[in-house]
Amino acid sequence: FFSEGIVGHIPFAEPFCPVLSQIVFQAAREVEATVHAKGTYVVMEGPAFSTRAESRLYRSWGADIIGMTALPEAKLAREAEICYAIIACVTDYDSWKELSEPVTVDVILNTLRQNADIAKRVIKLAVSMIPEMRQCGCATALETAIVTAPEFIPPDQKEKLNLLIGKYLKGDK
Image 1 (spheres, rainbow, N blue to C red):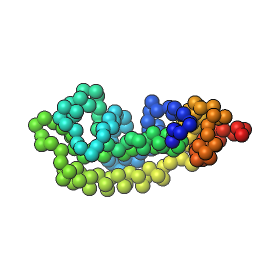
Image 2: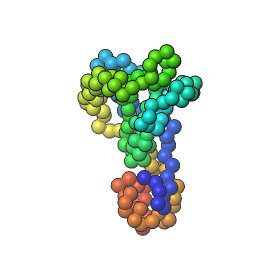
Image 3: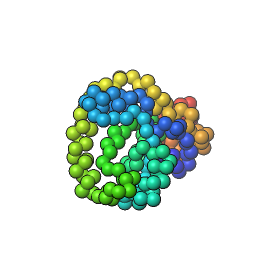
Image 4: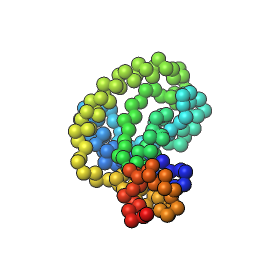
C-alpha cells in the first residue's frame, strides 16, 4: 500500500500472526492432521516448478517447504493490520528426491483433492477458536511503520489510505 508519496516499513521478521498461527496449529492437531508448528517457507515465483538445482539450493538453505502463494499476501495483510496465517498443505517433494519423478500437475491435483477436506475441517474449527479481542501486534503494525511525515503525505493518498493510516494521522490537517 505504500507508494506514491508515502513510505512505510512494516515489521516483518515473523510474517505470520503468532496467535492465529497457534490457533491453526491447534485446530489441525484436533482434527488429527499431520502438522508442524514451525518451519521455513521459501516463496518461489511460479508458475513453473523448481529445477532440481533450485530445489537443492532451497534445501541447503534449511527450507522446510517451498510454495508460490504466501507473498505478497502476508505483506499486504500486515500492512492492512490483518492477522494472517497459512495452512501450507504439502503436495509433493518438489525436486528434492533425486530418484523420484519430477513433479507434475496431475500429482499435485490429486494431492490437493486429498488435502482439501483436511483444510476445510481445520479452518472450520480454527474460526471458532479466534478470540474476540486481538492479542498480537498485527492490529498496530502501522503504528511506527509510516516514515513519511504526515504533512508531506499527499492529500489524495491520505484519503485513499484513510482506513489503514487515518488513526495514526489524527490531529494532522
